[in-house]
Amino acid sequence: MRVVLADDAVLLREGLARILTDSGFEVVGQAGDAPSLVDLVRYEPPDVAVIDLRMPPGFAAEGIDAAAEIRAFAPSVGLMLLSQHVEVHHALRLMTDFDGGVGYLLKDRVFDLTAFAADVRRVAGGDVVLDSELVGRLVARRRRDDPLDRLSAREREVLALMAQGLTNAGLCADLHLSAKTVEGHVRSIFTKLDLDADERSHRRVLAVLRFLRGQTPSRDVRR
Image (cartoon, rainbow, N blue to C red):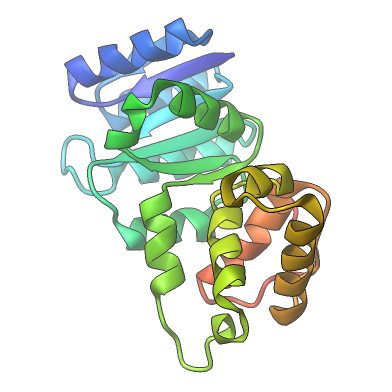
């Protein structure tokens, strides 16, 4: 699997390259700023780009702006955004403007090497990957007439893990529940939120994420 890296911190970029290479990826390009990243991807699109959210010259939203530009001309490229801190407004933009094949992780999570490599592969495959701390903040956001109020405490817990991309098998392992119990919770969540469940986990995640950002989910959520 081919990957491009973009981060202005050379040491971190080289560290990411080593981690991903050791995990079986082919690092085909590195960039220190957003324009260089876009040029790299335009010249030879990789399977996935790992992008620092804040890069020169303004250290604001250059990474996500570059991701949006890349998605416009290379829609099959997975986009993994890395950030020093949880920034909910950027995460909401990521979920609003992109339809699958995206991720948002804190840089601290990178050092769980196995999990990071697996998350990059999931993004390259079209899934949505969100940092657990970000998911917690999204679930905690309160709105008037919040549909989350319809859910039990256990269903809220299941929803948060679903939003991180866990399949039913993953939910069973994480929560130490039987497959039948997990299936019941998932059915109940989709019923209470008026969401259509789907056997393809990434479509289910996208529907949940649309709910979390406060929009009416579509009946036909496609990648």
